[in-house]
Length: 124
Image (cartoon, rainbow, N blue to C red):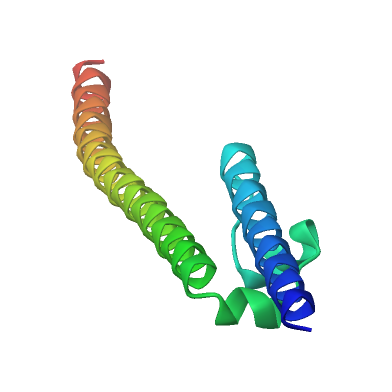
């Protein structure tokens, strides 16, 4: 009877290791494919239960680290977008100043032309 228990324990251990290897393999594939990694996506891709993924400390740690890393990447992309938005604002402000300057010059030139036309009319 002790042999049966030992055989069962060996079988459980081998199945546990196979499941862990399958999950880690899927996580590596998902990283290579740049697919978002979370407990649900690993569950769907590997066929393992979410409960197992949460309870296995090594797998839980790997998945949480991947999620944290992806969150930091999204944050960096957002910061880059914000910088681009700020630079757009600076360009728009510079264009607005240039337009105002040109409109003022246009007004000045129109009044000068009007004055010169009046002078020509008075000569005749």
